[in-house]
Figure 1 (tube, helix red, strand yellow):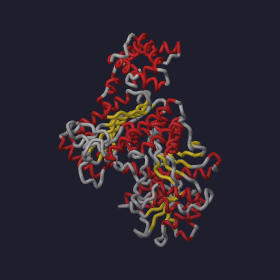
Figure 2 (tube, rainbow, N blue to C red; figure 1 turned 120 degrees about the vertical axis):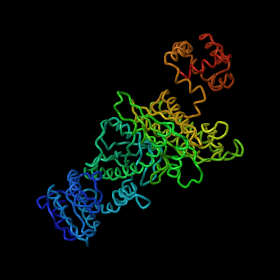
Figure 3 (spheres, rainbow, N blue to C red; figure 1 turned 180 degrees about the horizontal axis):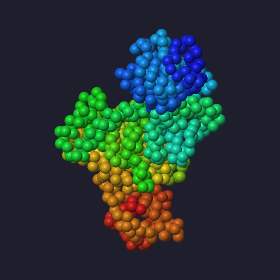
Figure 4 (cartoon, helix red, strand yellow; figure 1 turned 30 degrees about the vertical axis):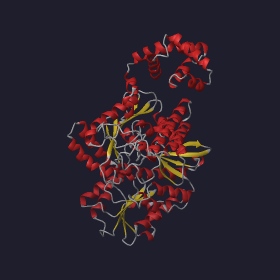
Length: 632
């Protein structure tokens, strides 16, 4: 459709004010705006409708028209309902930039023009999509009345009979036209991240549980979008994706073009949500700077009083606080800016994967400094339990912890087996669904853990087992597989979690504790690793900081004779040693675990002692073997 056809349609009430020699320009869409700079929402070829609310004086017309011209719009239509005649300065500016300008009679609603343009443009694509007018309006509307991405997905379902979902890079369902199992969502996110890292152009085809899906990246690529990143690693872990239950390989170009347009609409909503996080990010940044510079506790406490109602609205008492530190690191010369990516990723990791409200991250405040992201997490204060280990709360927390261990084990098993990104993601998500039965993300709740940070330990004391707070391993259990696909062979995510503290005085210690826990996680193998405050009071804290040459010499002296013997005789002395120590030296339990006769077990242990010159009845030798196995 061309501008000339619009002018010739009497029902639209358009009057040409300038640009008569440009009426053969094609119209590919329509947009209504009163923003002073709408470039981020323009991709070129639109008829722009405006009520002139952006114009304060004559000087505003020139920059507005210049922005539209740079974005490549087809023309501008100004309404006469509010200000009467279109100002002469706007007419002159459009003439200078050769931009066709129309006046819209006050009796004609912009919705009438929008519907007409949409009907004409979409006629060759996917039938009558007039409903996109209302859906687009809802998408751009914030608050409870706005439909967000759901509005566009409803459109795909009702008009094109396509089931679709918007997923985060961790596989969290942001929006969807139908239920989607968590394991399927995680598998799709993993496939998308792997394809993006491999440099393949979207849409990507994936098959999960016998069903074909097409995965479209969601990013703003219009002329008003941010400049293209230098390296895909800067954004791969932060981008949403659109998963459509269909194989787009045989789609006509018109339908593919329509789906690409849908991703643009959702990208605008993503940008709006990111902008809404600015206040929370600034709060976290201010608190972080105060804590790092050694500000007085009273000053930090005053800032926390401002942050509390933002992060936990309606809370009657002062919350407890927990610090989470994350770092994304890439192999190479450090040219990739990792701080913003770590910030966006930490905001995502801290969201409950089952959350489906408008913006489930609205209680998360994350700052970044350099390549490090720091989250300030508010937790409801929990009173001490009447008795340790009693009540349903304690049982629920214990059950949650057990399921979390199963989730972590399932992920590790999948990695060890060399599974595909989709399979790994599915295994982890299935385990995480089980873990979710025991509590919300991170274990926050009202168990029988006592008042975090209170008691003999003071402000920096860790919460008791089963108490409120985030658990490091559970944070990553459901997202490890998809994120590993995005990190590829050259990236790492490490995360550290502090104990909850109940006052401003404890924040500085909590920050150092979280950073120290992250360093412990960084010393472990694997692409996605986490450590919590509870690990800083055991041998786990010491092992990562043993120098590599000392580590190699110690383990070689104890374990190399056993490994050599195993290679020559297939005797399985190393697995026997591990099982013997795990069973606390119990001959009966160890023999049962290994399905051996006790005499066979005694023979193997005797061979271990003969080869190493150690005595496994002595505590010192047991401890040396235990540490050697942990460091190997």
